[in-house]
Image 1: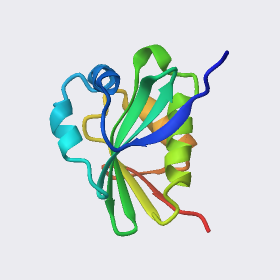
Image 2 (image 1 turned 135 degrees about the horizontal axis):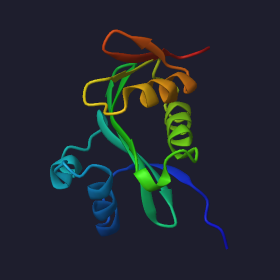
Image 3 (image 1 turned 120 degrees about the horizontal axis):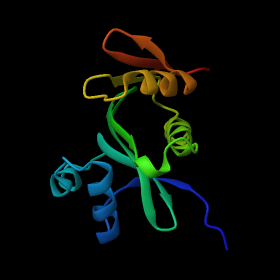
Length: 134
């Protein structure tokens, strides 16, 4: 039986989620991230076989959304997981008309630039932006 990749907004973390998020964001304080979850501060993730393979932190302010720490686990990269996570995140948040991802802290900038462009974002000073299409 094959499990499918699902995109979810995390409202709380299971023990397995905490282990997986520690692999995705090794420098992050997972307990602090979990305590900070609100309607404005969200974490979205890609789950496959009860494991989180990718995650992104999302800050919502009115009709603006800001992405941060968009990471796909290295063993899973280049398989469409990040693209699916990005596409579903945008689709599930139709009220957000402007999206932004700053390039600070991005290790492989050229790779991230290609990825963000593929997702419909445009390179701007300091990162990538995307306006919703109507």
